[in-house]
Length: 166
Image (tube, rainbow, N blue to C red; front, side, top):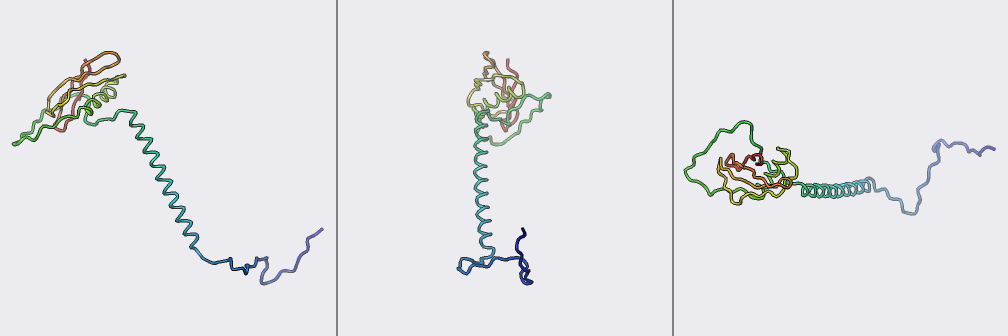
């Protein structure tokens, strides 16, 4: 059985749907497309901000689990630095080392530079002034033994060297 055919019309070779005359059809052009694009861009921006906040929160919680690395602390160099003492007419108020940062820095040097494990309870004296070539000792618990570590201030910025525990 074959489907009935109709002769083609030259003006409309393919059937085209007629527009309804109910008034529901409007030709508003590109406006709906632009509004949809703007809403999509705002949604993507909000999702990006939320994702960024999640990443920052994860990083902050990971940093809280690990001690902060202090760039001022360093292991002793192979060669001794030449002492340089600047001469000033008027000495400013003495600069003090931050005890918490100092203790954290000593712990990081012992772990990172000397490869020691289980470094705990670092205790350095409070109120250490930044004086070049000044030395003091910090008490450190490595494993179950209490040891002493020598710390020497190497420059006026508060950079210091941490010796091996003894």
